[in-house]
Image (tube, rainbow, N blue to C red; front, side, top):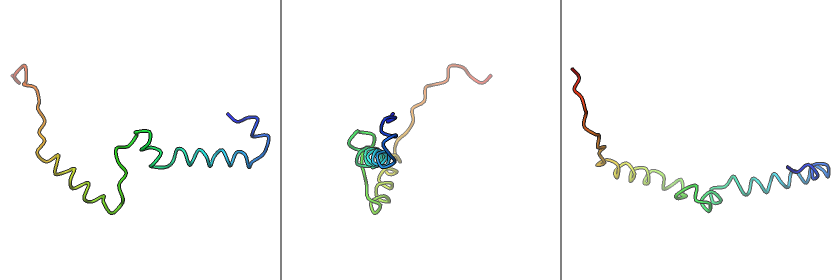
Length: 71
């Protein structure tokens, strides 16, 4: 991808790698692109998980009726 720049030296490749890390490996960049719904702090994790389980506690799955018996 950067064949001409590889010949220029290792510093150029290190610069490209750092810009890629800054762009791709942060939660903020993923949130900006819409890959994640929300970024939460570690101190909020327990409260968020409990709230999600409480919301799902009353949820029921509707299954279609069987067409045939087990005879």
